[in-house]
Image (tube, rainbow, N blue to C red):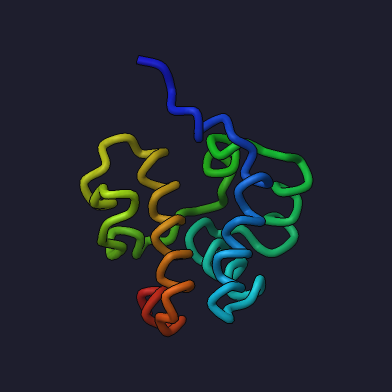
Length: 116
């Protein structure tokens, strides 16, 4: 079975869509960055570097310093699929990120999004 197309999609192509989705709901780019940094362990310069390099999603998550230990607390449905039931580890990480951005855009409080 071939890898999903999203795996080889540059993160930098999707990132502006995450920001736009959040901004349409009166959230900020900084909040999107905060969510991404929380999930992946990147600092801001590391995140900016990944965007600059046009790293694909596979590389983006492969080079992430450390996935947050509370990622298992991210539950719910994205694109009709429960994120906690996704078998492919990379797809699950991508869907975790989608879910966090969705929660941000829905106006959820940041401490709830970050599973504080």
